[in-house]
Image (cartoon, rainbow, N blue to C red; front, top):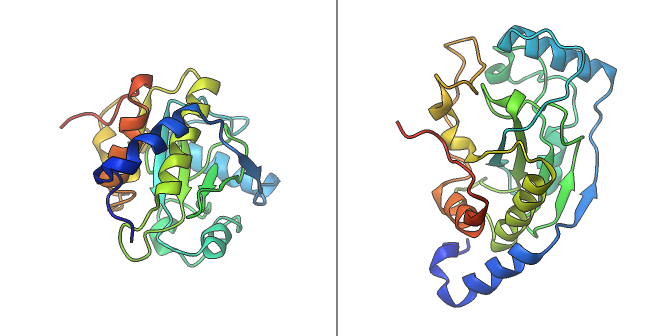
Length: 222
């Protein structure tokens, strides 16, 4: 496991500066997202958020960083392939749409785009209709996300904020419930919540420090 990123005084600054200047290398590796999955997504939007929509396009207001809870890229990637969440009772409470994500970052820092950036993916309760999600392979045995992933996330946040000026927030998955009661929160089922710890304070602090000049908001203070 890597030592905390911010404690590496000798190596942290060059890494951050390089990430600030670099353009992310994004490899397109799409998962199936055909008519059936799009219909399931529209049904999710209507049932959970009360919105009847013609397509699944979103206007992103935030970026949500995650870890996959698996240290293997293939296992993490394959999680997003099925259309439905069969066998996942924790998800089926809110319908059978499978989880999805716009970006997946390997432990080596390679960044993959799994679906169109502005199609809604199911990755964060209450906020999916506002959020672009970034999953990081890791977290299978606690916080083992790498410096390469921190650098990749920094580059990706900068890319997305430049491309989508509507983005105002940068949060970790573990912070999502702090948006309850705000205009961004859309979940209508008061009993549908899950407990999350990813990607953790170490990772979020490192990314936030490096992109502080973008003046992105974090979650509301409660």
